[in-house]
Image (cartoon, rainbow, N blue to C red; front, side, top):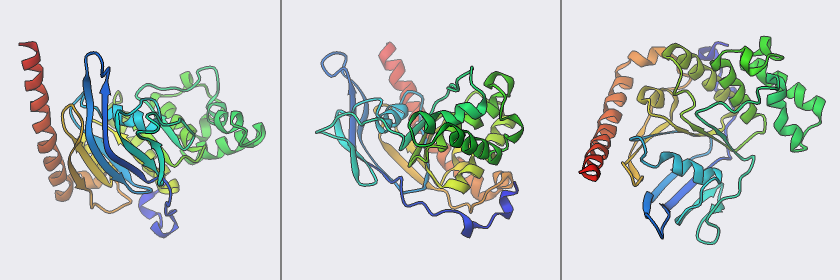
Length: 287
């Protein structure tokens, strides 16, 4: 598909998937080692936004994602989805649900199922669609994602990039409000990663699902994102938010533009400051 030729007016306008993170704090083992992972973090994410989150390793980004997903509780503060409370003082841990789907660093496809059956699994077991309808929808969405020739292949028979693309299709078939991605392309080479970026943006153009995407790759963050949120070293809180004003649809010609390089430099400066703090804190702990 030629994304540059797509008509932006044909793209859906998203009205769901607004995330409101309000003064969230997360302390692990408050009666023991008392590790504060997130401290008074506040962030508003608009429906259909691609929010890229960067920061030093171990700063608490994944802890925040897990709180949104319902994997971890919060110690203080509140998280809302479309105005409805996910977690807060009266409910420390959010319920897990199909409205928030997570794509992890490591693949999670069932190796004994074909790509079609992997993607069809969710709506079928949830009772949303019958088996034939689930498979039909899965085949259609996989074909849209460029996997039409691999529908009956098993995950071990396709490349890592194809398997990861199928995993994202599997997340999207349930029509979630939010897609939570934790460094999904971290282990990929640059060429494969660039192909995956294009595939993800094509899927985003069709769905306009809200993306909360954690990455260490600053160019990835700027190329994909509407905003880039730089987090502090642990405990995690918002340090700086950069608006990416580069028009959509985007292709790799923007990587050499002055606007793109300026955003990379500005983001790198903010992340580097926090990385130095994390390094110095580590040295002090070892001393």
